[in-house]
Length: 112
Length: 116
Image (cartoon, rainbow over all chains, first blue to last red; front, top):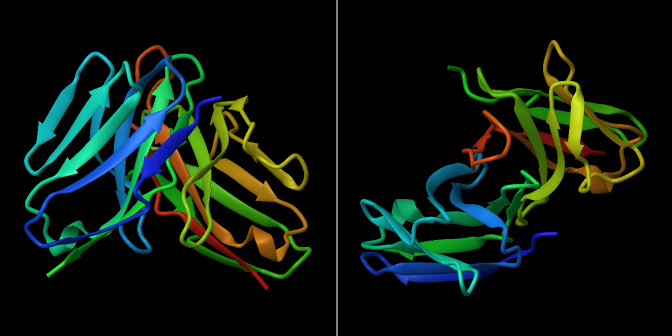
């Protein structure tokens, strides 16, 4: 089955700096890659996603890049703010299993 | 649209009791997923259901755990004879359609089970 790895497990950045979180997946049939943000005690919420026919997608300060050949995708957050502090999960989904497999998460701390 | 509704939000059980967690998907969503999250850990897939059918239960323990999504009413995750290790947040999520194509997964607020 699909295996999703995520690095780093924790990340601290200064406010205003950029943050990058990387994920790798194992199943070449995976074709949808969402990113979720989970604040303490809250539900995971979708922040951005990318499909396999696209290499990059941006939404204001966040962007996701996908390298299908290498089977990895990354989340980029620019001009980080304290409210970006949370746990971020990547996930993948294939066209056949229909299941979403999540990475172990990255705890991002934005220091003022 | 009320979103994905889970109840109860908090449930306390003593060892050996049963826990029933309910999930009503978003309106128009026909697929439900259950995930378990231990404190400070990730989202572990448990089971994926559509109405009256279990699609994938590969993440669910074979004993004591069961799930259903009846034709009418919410999806239910049932844990029999709970043990302390079952203490966790259980998140339900729903999506509108199955493959082909990828669809957005929307999470409920979670049910936090504490086993004394």
